[in-house]
Structures are given as structure tokens and as C-alpha cells.
Length: 224
Image (cartoon, rainbow, N blue to C red):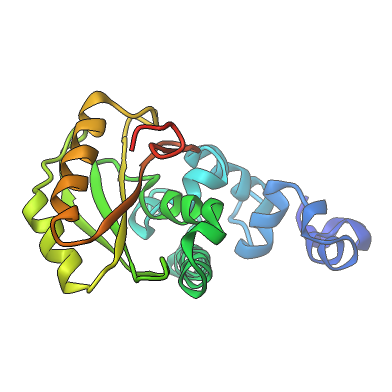
């Protein structure tokens, strides 16, 4: 049964306007974005198929337009709309952590990095470059590796910090396995970069490890 066959107060659009987006199930929210289904599958069935394929909204937010090509019924227009929504979420979080010191919104920093790195199938090492007031200057992905590891060169991190005229940095990398637990190698790398950056008067405020649905802070663990 598609939206038009439902009673007016049960249609996703009307329900959202009357009761707020929190009243909608996941399939209803996605159905609002997709709008139409395909032959033999209404928009709710298509929405459920998409969510099942990617393991819910978390996986969908990290899917690329190419990933979406594999689902019948997601043509160029629907893929573009989903990609646009994801990019709006990224930019909204970036604007929030650019406007104020990162310590004013640590949860938003984690959310931002989860969107940027959480769905990667290869390990990526990135750095948040911050000004003297700890506001975001830029996020830069400096190194890309394999499924399990990447090589990080302190000299390149220092060069990038100087190029951005950064006063501080937050280090970040993902674990493609989905487990965000920091390793001993992560602790050693953090100490090495902290020492290297201190030579040019740049502070390392944190090192965040991004997994699937979780971001772990080494500073919060007392490992920085």
C-alpha cells in the first residue's frame, strides 16, 4: 500500500507536519525522500529494501552514489537527492564547529567525523586543523591506506599544520573493521605526532578513532 492509499492522517508527509519528524518510522522518513516506488514494490517496500541493504540510516549516510546504483529503483534523481541530504548534514555540522571553539560542542565534532570517515572501507588518517581559539580551519585527509592500516608521516602532518597556520589539531582515523577501540600503535602514533607538532608550537588536543556507530577519544581515555 502506497502513501496515497493510506488515510490522510497516516501519510508520512501529513504525519510529519502534524506531529513532527520524530513521529515517523525510518521507512516513512526515507519514503518521503524517495517519493515513488517501482513496479511491484511501493515506496515503503523500496525504502525498507534500501535500509536493509545498508544496515539502517548509519550505513546509508556513508553510501556513495555508486553504492546506491546496485538497488533497483534508485535512479539518478533519487541517488542525487540522497547524496545531497548527506552533504547537507556534513556541511551543517562543519558550520557548527567552525563557528565556535570545538570544545563547546565535542559531540558535534564526533558526529562530523563519523559522517566523514565512518563508512570508509579503507583506513584514512585525517586532521582537523584549528586556529588559536580552537575553531575549525579545515579538515584534511592526509593519508589513505589498506583495509587494516595506513602509514602516517609526521613530517607531512607538521607541513600541513604550518600551511594552515594552525594553533592546534585534532587527529582522527577510522577502523574499517567497525571497532573503535584504540590500539597500542594508535597510542604510539599520537605520542609521536604530539612531540613533532610541539616543535612548531602546535598542540594536539585529541585523537579520535572512528568505528561503526562509535567514536572513541584518546584524550577522554587519558591516553593523550
